[in-house]
Image (cartoon, rainbow, N blue to C red):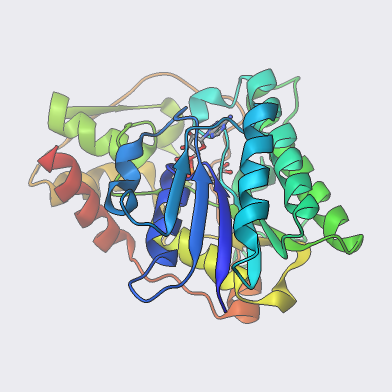
Length: 333
Ligand SMILES: NC(=O)c1ccc[n+]([C@@H]2O[C@H](COP(=O)([O-])OP(=O)(O)OC[C@H]3O[C@@H](n4cnc5c(N)ncnc54)[C@H](O)[C@@H]3O)[C@@H](O)[C@H]2O)c1
């Protein structure tokens, strides 16, 4: 089976690892990918930039003309492959952008919808929608093995903070996905990732690169006041991508519904900082607190029973191993 992949946001954390996992040495698949470099650079795919199985375009998912060109290229290339698969990774993602309602709506909701309609027009078989664990909002955990995809949500609203606009937009995309599958237009699913990190992150915006780079550059880390209590799990981007491919390879699972993808290695942010420090050889780390984030749940613990039972996916990279790789990469920069 040969596949043609259309990947948006391909130089981002998820997209670039997908390129590596799809284009293995003996793979006959082909990828057409694009990114507008909003939060990434071409460096992340440097290992495949000369691979004739990979074609990159500096395009914006919100630019109609560029998307028409991309659609035409997919149509033309698709004749040589058994199946066309769309994976939508383009999004405004980082926490600092969660408050920018218009920007996140345009890219995360309209961009997702337009890209899915393109997939349907070209006759793609599957569409994978990257959603987020943020949709669980204030009820992000329970004492019963973690929140499930079918649990009801308790969302913070504009009365509390604009922050939840990111989650609300992503939640809406899950309905578009479900509708397209129910209408028989395409196979697909939405994936709620929780706190993805990567050894290749160049911008220390997420908590793991932030902590490691703070210790490296300033000898201390300044965390939000929320971190005195907050606990999180962290998902290596190797595992987030292997989950995407596990779902993509399981037609039965592509019923339009939602899948949690996370680990159960939960720890407090303070313990995460201490663990990073000890791995960096810092015995008595300086941890300070400043700033407060409204509507940030104290815990985020997801049940991954659904994806594990339906696809056999499981975590391959432990937090300890992932942190070792991050530290060695960031310290080398
Ligand atoms: N990183 C996480 O912790 C996390 C958690 C839950 C869900 N997700 C979701 O997973 C998906 C992938 O995110 P990621 O972790 O790879 O983040 P990322 O920021 O590394 O990648 C997103 C990519 O989209 C690109 N992009 C942004 N706007 C664009 C536009 N208008 N046109 C074209 N490209 C654009 C960015 O430049 C970036 O390369 C997103 O849908 C995100 O919401 C991520």
